[in-house]
Image (cartoon, rainbow, N blue to C red; front, side, top):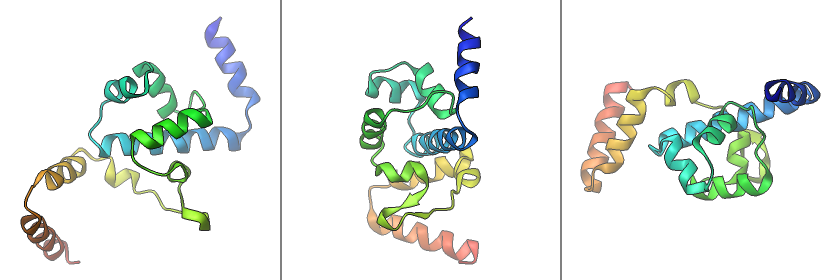
Amino acid sequence: MKAERVRAAQARRSKDEVDIDRLVGARLRERRLLLGLSQQQLAKALGITFQQVQKYENGVNRISASRLWDISRRLEVPIEWFFGVSGAKGRPVPSAVPDLMRRETIELVRNYFAIPDPELRRALLALARAAGGG
């Protein structure tokens, strides 16, 4: 019965609405992972269940404006970031989700920012640029 109501509600939404919900959810997941947060940790910070975070990330449940405001504050990004636009210009920002979602990328970023010495971080960045040909 509940599953039927969910399907019926989704069927009433336009393709554009569903696409936006999925985009916002994917960006939520991307940012959460970059910060090294579990769904449980984010849910606790927001005062909701981890299942609700899962539904947001999968685009199953829509995120209200007030909830998106709270999420943006907790994840330290402006609200427009979730829509893939930059600042007031409203230009699309290509998402790097495939590369950023890889476990090794997330580990690299977390460990890089865990280095307390700024000189050492700069040296590591220079090494990575040289190794990557950039």
